[in-house]
Image (cartoon, rainbow, N blue to C red; front, top):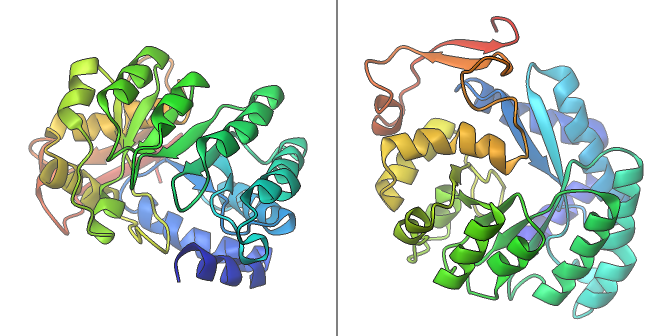
Length: 302
């Protein structure tokens, strides 16, 4: 089960099959107004399959009217052939795959999973050192199940974002604030794994940490392809205000991806917009199973 079962299926899939699966999920997001999506690797855990995933991700942008940002997530888990040899996996697979992805122009950012069931901070740091050498921004799955200091680690590298962060402490939040690191809140995973500790929303507010919201769409812990339901979950599970939730899927989401030309309506911004048939923006976070999308604009009407 979990990541490993998905790795087996992913390794067996062709690039065309990976693209077909990705397009079905992207279509669901587009149907609710999404104009930019982030697609990560991390389910190949060998060099060839990690690169195949990223090539399929790049192909999505050629097949749909959507912007795609790719994140290399080679440090996601240790595959069965490297059981109890995480250091060797980092040195022999994750780092060489990262270098190959960069050389091929396949990675916009580098991600990792810092957790007891994944990789220690020291192991993630080795990957991030290479990312910095290559000039790639980083982000991190941090403090989802425990506090290993992942948020502080991410902040020390000037990370675009630290994601999940249910177990982050105040010092981690302070480090994120100082670094300008976005907190990406993922209610779909919180709901699916029946987590009971919510992210420290009030502490994030107090320190002025920007909060983004995302689906965290993945087969193991968040099979969620509805950004509208994500808005609702952010408000109902974590008590975000509707304004915070909407900012979380627009301006702050763009910031978490390192994008400066989308996420707001202003002169000079790209015309990537969703027009809604609602009386108040709060309706987007309030109603469940409701899609009032009137028009989606991606440079032109779509």
